[in-house]
Image (cartoon, rainbow, N blue to C red):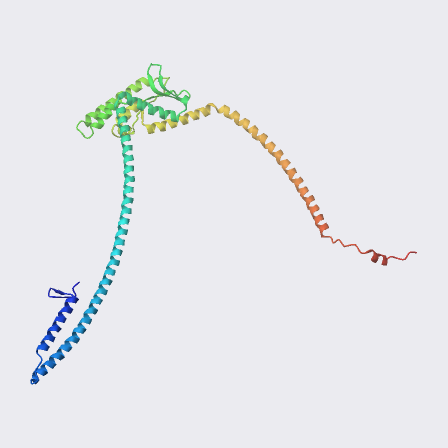
Length: 382
């Protein structure tokens, strides 16, 4: 059994306490029996009476103590039961909360893992795209590293721009001039303005050396070599493609890179001026598109001027057609006017008929009178 009283480390249960009190009472009774006084001893008799009174009081107190101990045991059991129930309830609530928290945590972890997998999939796709783009860039780099392939790349870019902006009969590619030189492109201007020769080659090796020597002691020498190579190429273009009476007085040097074009205008103005003096205009893809747009407008204006008499004849014929159309519209309007007048008269007739029908409907039709009444008012025969 569980201990009921604990004192100075000594724990006593209810049974042990009752047994102790019983032994104490039994000892008191034995003492009373053996200490019973004789007949001649009055003091001993009085002591025995007092002792008996004390034993009676102790018995009552023992009974009260047993009742209190029983009540305490019952109260303790009740409190223990209530405490156990309360602890069970709280443990159930805590377990439920812990379970809900674990479930919510699992759901969040599952959602986070799902989002993580989706993001990893996106990263994998992006990495594949980057790898593909890296391969394409490497291929482009390999293409541009070869002089022949680089020239073909620039020429194809120039041809695409020309084909997108000009009609097919306004240009020709790889045209052979009267001096035996083959030009990359030739744009046919209207009238006697001549054809504009376009070259798509450029000394990219000098440009590459210049970019590799950036912020190094060799930069000045690389810039000097770059300017020299460009000027040599401009001179070659002017000598090969500027033919009096055959080509336009200005040729074009096409650069497939906006960066090179900007570098020339920013740091090599003497090269640009030399090109203008030798009538060779350097163009980038952007400026070349603007130039082609202007050429197309010039071609369209020239075609309009060449076809001016045809336009005038067509305009005169169109004026006659408009005059004839006006006459026909006037006749049609006359018919419409006559038709409107006829419809108005028809409406008048229908209104009259309707009014007469309304009058007929409004008349009261009387019933016929009996024949006997009629004979009463007849005059006698003569």
